[in-house]
Amino acid sequence: MSVTPIPNQGARASGPTWRSVLAFAWPMTLKAIILHGTVVIDAYLVSALGEAALAAMGLAAAIAGFVLGAILAFANAMQIRAAQAFGSGDPVFVKSALASGLTVSLVIGLLGLGIILVFGEALIGSMSPSDEVGRLARDYLAVFSLVILGEAIGQCLSSHFNGCGRTTLPLYSFCLSLPVNVIASIVLIHGHLGFPAFGVAGAAMGSALAVAVQVGFLGWRLLRLDSDLFRVPGWRQDAFPATLLRHLVFSLPIAATFISATFATHVCTLIYARLELNEFAAMTLIAPWIMVAGTIGMQWAQATGIIVAQLLGQGQTEATLDRFLSSAWRGAFWAAGAVALIYAGVCLSARFLYADLSQETRLFLLSFLPVLLLLPFPKGSNAICGNTLRASGDTIYVMHIFVWAQWLFRVPATALAVLWLDLSVFWVLSLLLWEEFLKFPAFHRRLLRGEWKRAVFDQN
Image 1 (tube, rainbow, N blue to C red):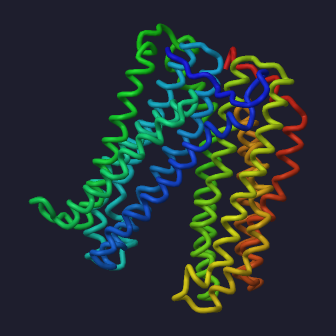
Image 2 (image 1 turned 90 degrees about the vertical axis):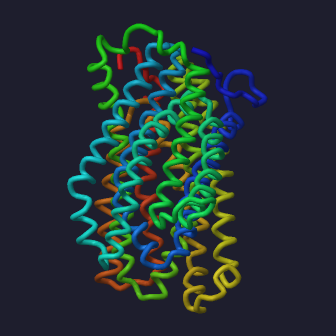
Image 3 (image 1 turned 180 degrees about the vertical axis):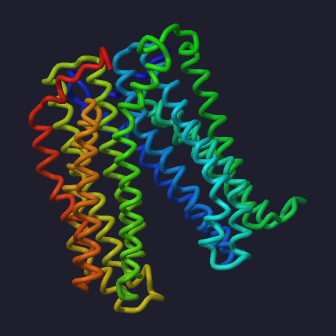
């Protein structure tokens, strides 16, 4: 197995620094932004077909999104496992992490497709506002099933490369697939170049072709860089079933955290719909900015977790771990500052960005500024703690913090603020900040205890 060492571009020769995190984080950040942008582009291309087609794509994508969300959740867990394996230098561990992650991802994808096959038509029928929307949604979902299978493989390979420090490869795969998606969708939606016009199903075909390109590129790089793994004998545990079970035990708490966050966000969005119209419009406008700009801080934290997992796998000293985390933390505050500046730019330029909206809606956006200027800092620090603890294997504790903060505080507090107390949208948005403050002591107390620095992976 060829190896890619942890980048060390800092002044110290004793270990990685924030520059190492930057080398890992920028490709991951760009990939995440491109992923979010792809959704926007697909919606824009389909919008030319009218509201029915757009509604059909949104309905089908919402159903498929639950399966894709589960695949992404387990891919995040595999990323940390791959980093632990890569840091250990044990090719059996690396092969075991890859094979186990791929098996789990494919099983989830196939189970999700089975559920969609059995219940999808009834679900579309109950949710679609008209027969036309339902028919278009079924056509889209039938083709989009290929995307789900492709993502099950592609996300797994991306996590393997990220964990091994090759974070540019998943970015390159997205850079290759994005133009394929756009061009193929335009051709197949509208019937150019002699092809029939498939309408909304053409958008799904374009996505399927793009995923095929992405998976093909990642598979080719895997064969070129890690073909030796296929010749490594044995498994991390005595046999593959035991290895797969150990991988599941490690992955389930991480996956549960991401799945819980997705459901909690959907529930809160439904509650936001009960706000006054201008307030709901302001929340709807700021939500994508929070997601996209927040990617900067979140990917920085994930890159930090990857390097911590590699260092722990190498058996590095506590002094090296402390030095690295201190440097990465300083970088996280700079990343949080960049996110805060983006939020400030959006709020302060609302009258130019959203000139067609009412002044009241723009004033609500401006009122969000104090919350958004503070939010990235505790959120980024909590993310550093969470990813560091996960890298050490302390996944259940991290899951408890996230899940209980979401379901015992954010969701009920949002319902109380909107449905009963009828509070201003400013206070509703501020609950995101209060949630981070609530998690802050639990995360930082656990990290400062230092047990994560003594984690070993010889027997797990």
